Image 1 (cartoon, rainbow, N blue to C red):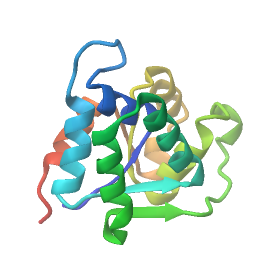
Image 2 (image 1 turned 180 degrees about the horizontal axis):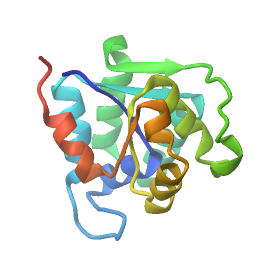
Image 3 (image 1 turned 60 degrees about the vertical axis):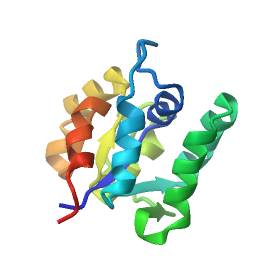
Image 4 (image 1 turned 120 degrees about the vertical axis):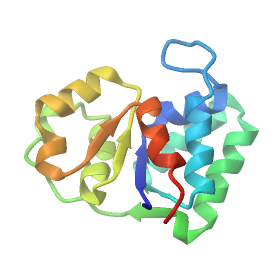
Length: 151
């Protein structure tokens, strides 16, 4: 099954640095991004996310992650660029800097991948996954979805 993923910017940073949210060596986020590409999945982004991705990449001086992102964004079949997301009732409950990412995931019904445990708990508490038919996953939980070959 083909999936659409929304990756928070920390996942991009972890992919670049081969680390996890604790700063330990971990290749999960990098493997996740690579698997999304080779198994013909998509990412959903918006202007906010694209800017955040490139800020993280620039700060890390990450050549291999730039190649992965460029590969995704050069191929129209590999991404969905969301220019508009409607308002949702939960907006006042989500931190302002996370709201564009959450709205993108909800609007596209994507697999939302974030290493931010606090944000995942807030989204679960608001029952956003149930109400809007999305999954909220950490990178390790998302990896099997990305490794599933396109059928």
